[in-house]
Image 1 (cartoon, rainbow, N blue to C red):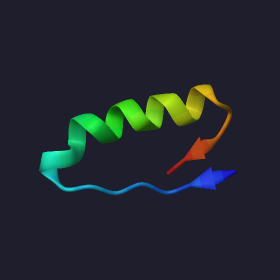
Image 2: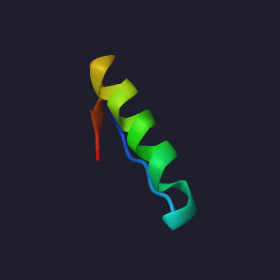
Image 3: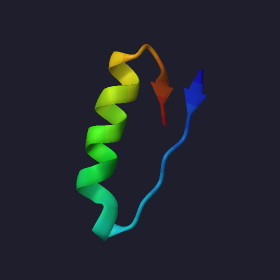
Image 4: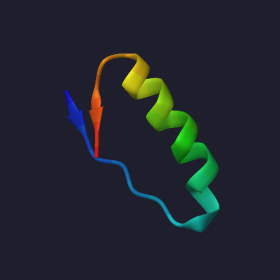
Length: 30
């Protein structure tokens, strides 16, 4: 599945953890 994620500066750290989790699960993250 292809997933796009955006965030502001306050959510940057959470976004990095979420992207790593999704990539490890086999998803493509933009």
